[in-house]
Every structure is written in C-alpha cells, then in structure tokens.
Image (cartoon, helix red, strand yellow):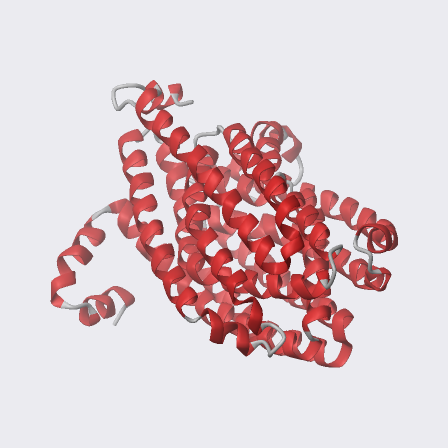
Length: 459
C-alpha cells in the first residue's frame, strides 16, 4: 500500500473531498507530496535536536549556554557571507532549467558548488584570524576565542552544504532530503550530547562540525544520484559562463539576507555587554530553539513551494502563480498561529525543563513566539520576490526591519532577555506593515500580475 492509499484510508470522510481536490490539482499534489516527505524526514531529527538542546543547556548552565549561543550567532553571521545565497540560487535555477535546459542546470550547480567552497574558505580564514580580537573586544569574553576558531570550520562546511541542499530542492527531491535529514538527526543527537558532556563549550561546537561533515557526505552522494536520474550533467568546466546569475540573483538575495543576521548579532552583542548579559543570552538561545515549533511546517511548505513557484513563473502561468502564493499565505498564517498558541500556553513548563535558572524568563519565550506570526507572513513575500527575480525589494523590506530592531533593542536590552525578545516582536510587526503595503501594490497595482499581460512584464 502506497502513501496516497494510506492517506485516504486514514482520512476522515468529511475531509476526503478536500484530499481529492489536492490529488487532482497538479500544483496541490506536488506541494502535498513534497511537504509530506520533507516533514517525514524532519520531525524526528528536529525533535531529537530540541531534546539535545535541553540536555546541553542543563549540562552547560545558563551562562555557558549563552556563550554557546553567541558562538553560533557569530558563526551564522560569517556564514551568511560565506553562503552568498547560493542555496537559493541553485534551487531557483535548477527548478527552472532541469527539464528545459539540463546542461545549464548542471553548470549552475557546478558554479554554486565551486563558489560556495571559495567563499567558505575565505570566510573561514577571516573568522579564524579575527576570533581572538572579536572575543576580547566585542564579545567581552576572551575565553570564546577557541570556540570561535572551531566554529570557523562549522561555517565552511555549512556553506558548502547549503549549495548542495539548494540543488536537491531544485530537483524537488524531497524524499531524498527527508532520508538525509532523518539520518543526520539520528547521528546528531548522541554526537551533540556527548560533545557537550565530554568537552563543555568547545566540545559542543566540535560536535556541530562532526554533525555537518556527515550531512555533507550524505548530501553529496544524494546530489550525484539525483543529477544522474534527471540527466543533468554536473559541469564544473565552463560553469563560469553562468556567472551572470551570481550578480543578477545571488547578489541581491545575499544583500537582502545579510541585513538580518548581522543585525541580530549586533543586538546580541549589545545584550551580552549588559550585566548578566550571557545569562540573558542563554534564555534567548533557548527561545530560538522553540521558535522552530510554529515555523517548522511553514518552513517545509516554503522549501517545497519555492521550486514549484519558480517553475510556474518560468512557464508564464501567472494566474496559478498568484493563486499558489495567496494559498501559501493563508495556510502558513493558520499553521503558525496554531503552533504559537500551544507554545505560549506551555511557556512556563517549557522554560522550566532547561533548569531553574531559565524559569523566570518565560515571557521572553512568549514574545519570541509571537514574533513568528508576522515573521512568517513576510517570509512568503520574500519567496515571491526570489521567484520573480526582484530580490532587491527584499533589501528594502529587511532594511526597515533592521532599523526598527536596532532602535528598539538599544532601549530594551537593559531589561535582559525579555527586553531583547520584545524588541524582536516590535521589529517584525513593523516589517509586516511594510510587507502588506508592498504585496497589495504588487498584486493589484502592477501590470505584471494582470492575467492578460505576459509574465515577462512582471516587476
């Protein structure tokens, strides 16, 4: 019995007409199938990672867990530079060309892989060299120098991994990605817990590096297999002929994305420079682990829907493109609200699980989870802009978020974790207001989304 038969057998009779509509819709069926396999591979792995975060926090304590969060945030900031949005580049262009122009799709995969290695190595060297200066002068914690240098390796592997995962998403190989995520989750739990238990902070960061090595190896084998299945030749020779996509797509996507991570890092640096700042950051690191609960399924839908939307736009089917975007907004909004409700409902016992030191900061979890609602709405619009090749608008939208966050954090970080979380909520609410006006203009005022106009006129 296949998955579809099981779904119909388990589905209540009242829901079967909806299931039939999804099955008969080409886009709906592709989306449902992709989300199912992505979800199947991620639920167990993400749950294990959440459990691992609880154990690691209890082992390290609130202050050292805050240091661990600062190391990860710093690695993420440099990783944004290293990644150069190559995963998104691979997803969009592989989805667009894998059937119509497989040679070009292969060259873009080769270009993304090669450029991710070069950028990853460059930023790894930069972080390794400047780790002592950053830890002493900016983070006010000289003891973090060694952990940051280990983190430079984490950043390099993650950059290369991102390009591979992006290409697999472009192939819509979500069943393969599900298997990889499942295996990585099974490996990462014992590795992370043992690393923290045996080596403290440095051991936990080494565990991240080991985990990513396994992820890279599994992704590499999967990408080779999927490229053969789709008859897409992975071409490194001559891939520089596609370098225009780096400036036309990767650069704007990179600029829009880079607004967020450094601003988060700056605001966290402001937080750790407050009295008991690393303890407060320990609580924020906990809340960020739980942010994935309301965003988890939405992230799966976005990952699956990006290549579908890219293909619809590439084929000029603007009516179905617009319909799919509005459906994703409604579905994601419902999911994130339901998920946020349950996390907020149990916010006190959730924080207590990490130890008595974390219990008093439950309001930080409430504010962070509330911020996921406007955050998810703006994420959908960001996906639309990537599909239509107008990522520059994301720079403006994210820039407004960054300015709002910096101003709010400046006044609120003195209140510790709760103040930082409230600043996060204020920033995302401001971004949502901007996004609503932008989306209204995009769909109603701009001729490119008129059904009677060619998709080439799209903004």
